[in-house]
Amino acid sequence: RNHRYRGIRIHTNELTHALAEGKLIAHCNLLVEKDLELDVNGGPDAPRNVANLAGQGPKLRMVINHVGNLPIEGREPPRSWLEGMESAAKHPNVFCKVSALVEQTGANPAPKQVGYYEPVLDALWRIFGEDRLIFGSNWPVSDLGAPLETEVSIASEYFTAKGERAAEKFFAENALNAYRWKP
Image 1: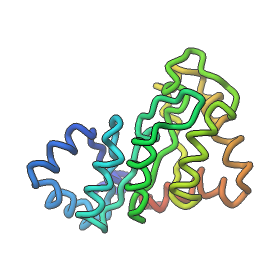
Image 2 (image 1 turned 30 degrees about the vertical axis):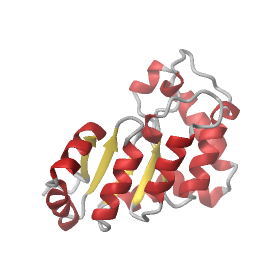
Image 3 (image 1 turned 90 degrees about the vertical axis):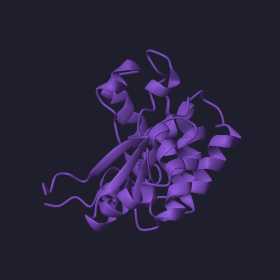
Image 4 (image 1 turned 180 degrees about the vertical axis):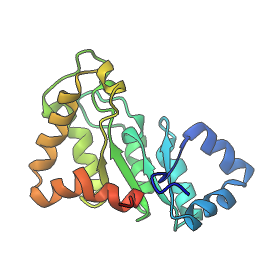
């Protein structure tokens, strides 16, 4: 009933188990009925699990957290991650939160240059486009990789280069569409 409550978050391990039991869709239909969304956090199986669930519940809005928790290594992402993200993105109700970039490098401090993150960001841009990518800082956990300013700077440099309209969508409007915030 609280208008600030916009959805729930589930870990991909829980999602895998719930999908196997076949009970998840009934629970997700309640989210749809209440105009709430489902965030999915987890490892490499998250995008495929999201795609599977999106196929069963096409009205459920979902957000893949932390770019699917991909280790970011300054090079092209692995084919399996790309295929999982592409499969999830085929469903227009699936968004991806661009967050946890610096801590996914495993370095402290994480690289500050946007070029290090471009292979992953370029793939996300190609896969989800400007309408379904959402900014997230993951602060204070992001401090494990770099200060908040670094995370914001990387995202800002990359997405403002895509144009003012794309940046507005990334930093605000896409989150409104995914979470349906209420004033």
